[in-house]
Image (cartoon, rainbow, N blue to C red; front, side):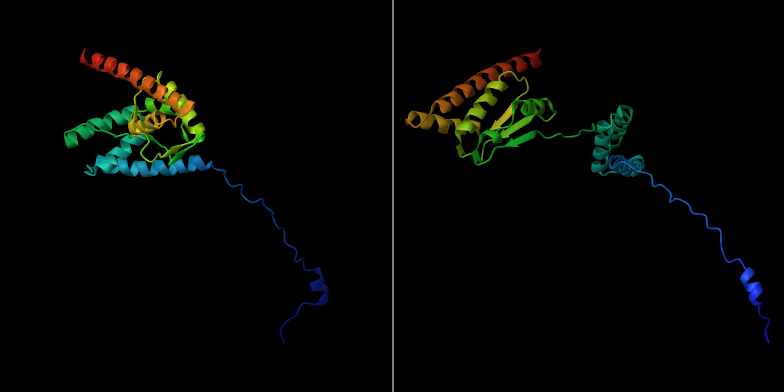
Length: 212
């Protein structure tokens, strides 16, 4: 018969255990932006390695160049530009498209970009474009806002490509001649003419300076 513990012995057994209660490890709080940038650094390092080994896909070179410019790594950008010249026999160029403002079919006051936005776009490498091709109607507020914008642009040195504006103004002038024009329309045409005059003079000054 197997030996058993007596009731006394069982009563004296201590089944308690000392349990060390530990606080859960605090998770490091990482800024989502920093996490994304860290991930981007990993991708950029991989691209830089491919470029260093002579990658012929120019997209990789442009991506790397854009990153260096955005992060103000001038030394790295200049080094990359020299390597690109050796590898491809032509300068490294990053085309920067214009900032485009597309006006809708019916233009209300809030649809016309503010002068500060257009001024900033003009200062960008690609310049600014305003697209009037879809415009068919303007509310009175839209006409006022456009007049204000054109007047404000008289003092902006950067050029704005006004696509379709000439044809649109011609339709406004036709409405005025037919007797359907309003004071706001007349003000718009006046602002347009002042804009054309001011920027024609600026263009002539720019061309003259370029020839010197």
